[in-house]
Image (cartoon, rainbow, N blue to C red; front, top):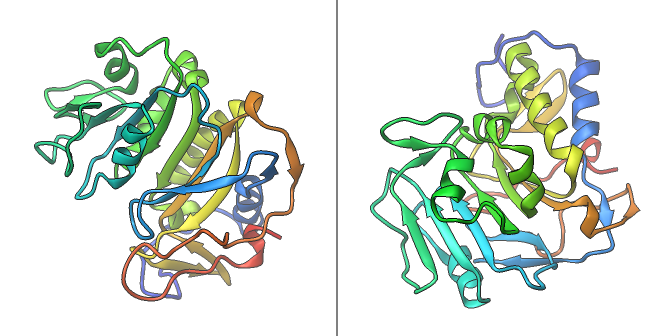
Length: 253
C-alpha cells in the first residue's frame, strides 16, 4: 500500500485504532528533572535529563561523522565507550574515549557484538551509565537482546528510532511494541524529536516521522509531573538542512 506523502512504501496490516493507540503509548511525560542540551545545535545533539551526579560512564554505539556529544560527556568526567564497524575511530580524540570497531546488534559475529558483550569486554557491567544509541535500525534487536541487568544500569537513554513510519506493518508493529514495552518497564520517555533527515509518512491522515529521537530517564530517578508535554521543546533544533518536522498534537496533547 502506497503512503500518501513522499511515496514511502508500507504494508497495510494495522488498523487506524491500533496505530493511534501506539502513538499515545509513546507520548512523553514531564518529570521533575529538567532537560538540557548536550552536543551541537544540529544532528548529534540531544535533549538529556539533567541527572549527571556521580555518572561516570557514557555508552555510545554508532559513531558517525561527529563526536561532539561524546566529547562533552568526556569533558564532564565520563569514560566514553563507542562502537561502530563502519569507521576506524571517533571524529575527535580524548583520553576518556574507548573505541571498539564492531557493530552493536542483537547477535555476535565477526563484525558484531551484543550490548552486554560490549560492556562486559571493558568491565563496565556493574556500572551505571548514560546510553546514547544511533545504529540505523539495529536498535530494535539490540534492546530486545539487552539483559535486564544492563537495562537497569542505564540511568539515561537517548535513542534514535528508525523506520517508525512502518507502524502500519504488522510485523514491525509487534517488534516496536516489544521494544517500547521493555523500555517502559524501567524508564519514562521524557522527550521526542523527529529527525528531519527522513520523511514523514502520512497515511490515513496520520503523520508519523520515520526517524524519531527519544529521551528516557530511569523511573527511580524521577517523578511524573504531568502527562501533558508541549513539543517542540525550546532547546530543540532541526537536525539538518530543510524545514524541521513539527509533530502533530496526537503526539503530545
